[in-house]
Image (cartoon, rainbow, N blue to C red; front, side):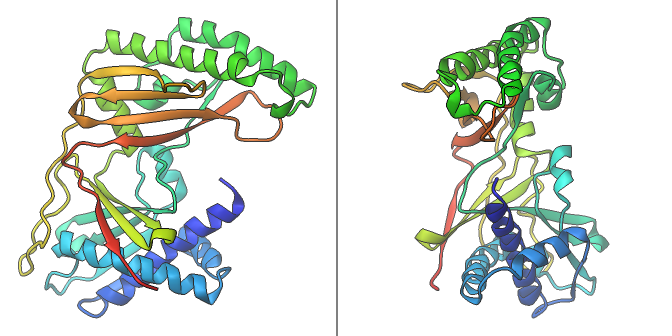
Length: 319
């Protein structure tokens, strides 16, 4: 991710934080926990023009009003103080993809929002000569066969790095790097799925979407839409309040138990498509994340199909 995109993402998170505070404080007591992530986001926010600040706040308000309809416990009548905060980035490494938390300590309740600005990516995981993706993704160490398969690929990249080569200098990076690496990755997933039937599909989705239920909120500026997707995999979202009732009902989504298909995207040498039961579908596009060759590649992982129980809600807005 470029520095500009990173700053815009942090600033967009900050717009949600300050808009949540403004709207909630009209109804009930609320505080912002000002941690290091708060100050980083505030710094990014202050780099925006006034026009962009206004655009971000309008986009955030559209999403927040719908979140209030989904989560009555946010505004439910009570004397306790509600807390909101931006989570530290390293929480994502621990399986928590939520950017903003909304917390009521008095009733031991919280929900999380994953905030995205103009992109739908799920994860940007890496493959390298030492990184054990199996242990990281689903708690099963990669096999010796996997390490054997990828060894010549990364030896080739190591040699090119020593020459200070650029990726554009490689005569055929797709056939020499992307295709064999994706084939090794594919074979390892299929191998582990055979050994650990029913576990791997569920664990992959939990890795990609995190260990906690959350709302994914994507601001799409050019369409003037804020889209909300509810990932209610454990039934912790959409609880009724004591005084307020939920205006929108969302179901619980089922985690998969089978890999239906895992293969290259048609006419592609850099993307695998994973089809699971229960309606889950993902694409894994491998790419070099730098100009110069290095023995590490990055996945751009996207959801290309979701269970029918995950209903995208488009919140239109006007600037």
